Image (cartoon, rainbow, N blue to C red; front, side, top):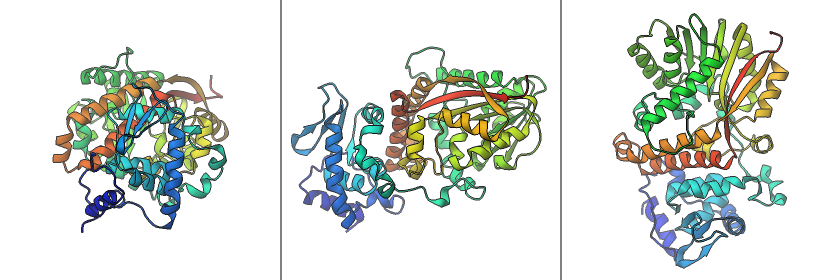
Amino acid sequence: MTTVSKIESASSAHHESAVGPRPVVDAEVWPQIARVPGGVKVAVAAPVADFLFRRAVARLPVRVSMPGGEVIGAGSADAPLMTVYRPHEFAARVGDSGLIGLGEAYMAGDWDAEDLTAVLEVFARRMASLIPKSLQRLRGLYIPKPPRSERNSTTNTRSNISRHYDLSNDLFELFLDETMTYSSALFADSGRGHDCEQLADAQRRKIDRLLDRAGVGDGTRVLEIGTGWGELAIRAAARGATVRSVTLSIEQQELARKRCAAAGYADRIQIDLLDYRLVDGEYDAIVSVEMIEAVGHQYWGTYFETIDSLLAPGGRVAIQAITMPHDRMLATRNTYTWVHKYIFPGGFLPSVRAIDEVTEQHTSLRVRERLSMGDHYARTLDLWDTRFAQYRREAEDLGFDEVFARMWHFYLCYSEAGFRSGYLDVQQIVLDRRDEK
């Protein structure tokens, strides 16, 4: 009997509905999705997880449909609907690994939602209170900790980056706009349309604002930490700047070099496969877009110290950073999450306060300006998710199966829910030296 067949048999044994979006699972590619957790730990933890889930949902404006017609939750008839197809498997996964299990249960098709973002937003708005405070004190004994192999040392970082950014340039081209920009856009209006050309314009607006705040113009020596696929470097070079950009993604470096050459700026842009800690030289402007999230909290001091050491007198720094509330940052900094396991190994989000404190303690830099853009990121993610759904068959042709598609949809909706709820924000932050007028 195959692994998937065993799962089906287990589900039938619990008299659960066989109806549901169960994907075909390749056990070699997705071993922890193909296997439902078991053993003594799960036998104890699954009923507890079921109890805590029902207790939390009973206070939330959401509806949860269970097999047999049971509906739980405090939501009205038009509240977001979550459908649990296999409650025993759902509880086993959540009991085994908490929120990691919640994401894995979605990947396995144990539950679904027509509007996944809306369901996840309900949970995100109450993230700090879903688990009773008495049990939160025990999280250190239960919640897994990040593996040391994923700490962003100079030895590990390239592997961490590669696991996400080297998936396939063709995959990212499916859902990104023509600028190939994989970070929050900055929209001129407050709409929520699905016009990709509008997204490209909003991405250029975001980049141009960062370059403006960094003072990038003719003759400026620019360092970009985190190349992406080259759009920022191209727009800086178009202003007459010379750009050195560093990345640890082989795929990004290859395509970014091609895009820079096609734009006619190969002589102005140097793209190196290099850890930011190994960069040398002196630069009038240093720009880094959503790269600090991949640094790891253990290395934030090193990140800003490096920037400080490379910045020329009178220079400016402009970064774009996803942030989270300071209290949640402190509570979760040693927690291994679904996002770490499946999307961004080694990543961690700073708080605004943490950036202030680290730059104050470790550098001569000070924060001059901030722009909060969380609503813009929610809209950006919605556009990406819509396009990914449109090109799902093309993703399958590239070798990304149905489990991957569910994982990617969960990732984009999970992120969008974080920004819509206010649990996450994204900031453009400008810094310069406190002792320079």
